[in-house]
Length: 272
Image (cartoon, rainbow, N blue to C red; front, side, top):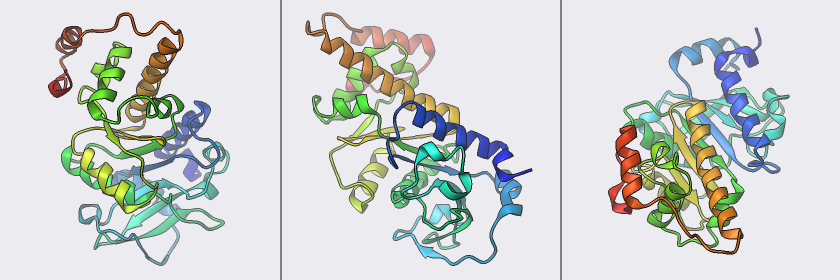
């Protein structure tokens, strides 16, 4: 059996391929990290490299010490992952202090994890605490309709959450807390990492202005489905506006509450 045949790798590869086919990953756009379970690490261990050097992360994430992550490589293209995982992704080990990493598998022709690896780790650290170890994924994609909305909507969590909830009935069920919004910042930097991790304490999805979506979830299907739902809702809203007649009717606040009650979810009332 090759490492690509392991269930964890098949799930990881499928999400990358699905995201590319949706048009969310032009060139080397987007990135994806997955925090592995102990059983998954054991299954991959026979493929690990021996005695690789440690590299400073630039931050300390103490509660991720000793954890292993699958990560896309910096500068690698999502479209190539399904056909060439050895050179496009890697498995990374975090040291005992939580301040350095080493590549234990992958990137056979050299390279490093995604340039936004520190951002991913800060958000993994937050989600590990706030979800009682449940959430394992941080996924970033350049979703065109959400990006378009960041040019026309006020850059507030309330404005974006209300538009997305009201554009498709499924939305308040899928993300009842709403979405956070980060104003434009330099990608891969410390500022955007800290701003996103603060919002991740409250939301599973962060919209990066003029850039894309940064979201978290417990597994591959749930996380991809969350991003797909938000992007589809943004597309519906943009199509409705493009008809040139304005928005004539929509889901009311009381109807949003009715949906939440029917499906047993708690909506973020500060947005109603």
